[in-house]
Amino acid sequence: MAESEFKLGQRVHSAGDPRRIGTVAYVGPVQGYSGVWIGVDWDNGDGKHDGSINGVRYFHAKSERSSSFVRAHNLSSGISLLEALRLRYQGDTTKEEEDEMYVLSASNKRVSVELVGKDKIQDKLSRFEELTGASLSFLGVSSPGSSPCDIGTVLPNLKELDLTGNLLSDWKVEVLKYSLPAIEELHLMGNNISTIDPPSFLTVHGFDSLRLLNLEDNCIADWIEILKLSQLRSLEQLHLNKNILNRIFYPDNDMIGELSIASELHEKSDEPFQNMRCLLLGSNNLQDPASIDALNSFPKLVDIRLSDNPILNIPRFVLIARLEKVEILNGSEVSIRERKESEIRYVRLVMSKLQGNLEDIRQLHPRFAELKKIHGIDDEKPSTGVAGPQKMASGLLSITLKCVGASIGERSPLTKKLPATTTVGKLKILCESFFKLKSIKLKLFLQEEGSPLPIMLDDEMASLMDVGVGNDSTILVDEES
Image (cartoon, rainbow, N blue to C red; front, side):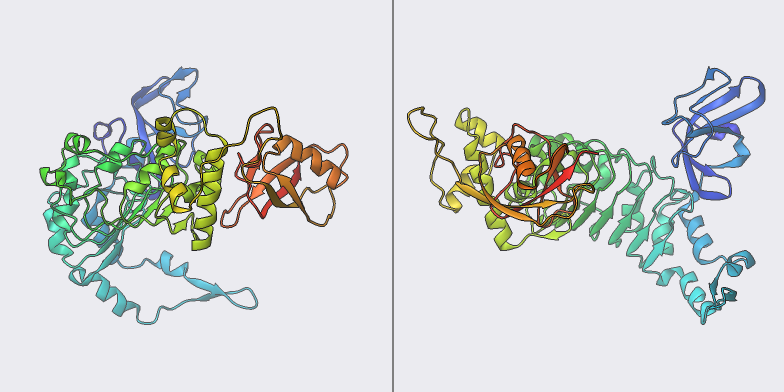
């Protein structure tokens, strides 16, 4: 390709290796070298410098050795979807590929594998009109082709399309709604997508059968972009793991209008995300508890993943209590018993910290009044008078303490009853006494059923109730490394 065919921000891959993908960050001369060079910032970080060479900076790469300068002929700007389709399903396997198909015998020798019925299978796959699913991952797909409508003609029965790891960050995905109207599953993982453009691509016409949309491992930062998907009427699963979202909010009618979504959506019967049951949001940057509350507005949402977000400092029981309809949280089922216990613990926790006016409480804890009524919990606050002993909001908690520190040695677990007002700092001192630990700096973790990782209790001034410790909780006693 000529140097003029590359532009800043363009997604490219190394010629001959469509899995080595990067973004064009510079096009032009490099001091001390002849001709035009393309500066590429590689996704896998496998480069030679940070965008500067011999003391001259040409661009800023994402890390110290993630970029390199290459000649145009060593890069590819990709191929069309239909070209990839023919390459994947109509091309013959090469001798090199067949040589790589082997198993190891008991004596560690290679035994060639012969695919029985290979020709019959390949013949069926090559008849595109019969294909119901196509995987075009890591083939350098960058466009639909010169005539997008051809896709629907060639693939009239396609229901599932996997475009993982391609070059579609600036591709107008709008073409798919016209060319693949029967599509049910669309996978766009790892395409560096940051915006969904234009909003009109998601009007009520088109994608009428789409049930699953996978946008994992992209660069979506603003929930506004996700709201452009909100009127995919048939959408049941939306996968957004490994993006950079920092908040979630539910649109009002004015916002829906601003997003240029069709006027029909203002009807009360057409709620955004009205059929979505599963939303995966792991490994983002969600921090605000209000983002959790916003998920209650999605009428059928029952399966939610929030793992590996800063918000996971919030205990599991608080998440369950705030999420009204969740049945599966972070891959773990929420039982009827766990929901009831979580909601009661949450109400007690909020009551122990009640401050300010009722409107502030309603905004910070939208489900508090509802849950208090559901579980018949009376208004009660700890007495603050100096004349008598302070009343504890939740009495004594039965807690199991388990030593897990490498140098602590094997110790039998202990079950103790402690006041809910006991601070984390006080509990550390008690653990030193319970387990006869001297000269060991301790750290404590709350281990909750259904949570993949224990929660570190790092605020020494917080009470056990404040950090979500409830009756029959387990606390791990570890040592500072």
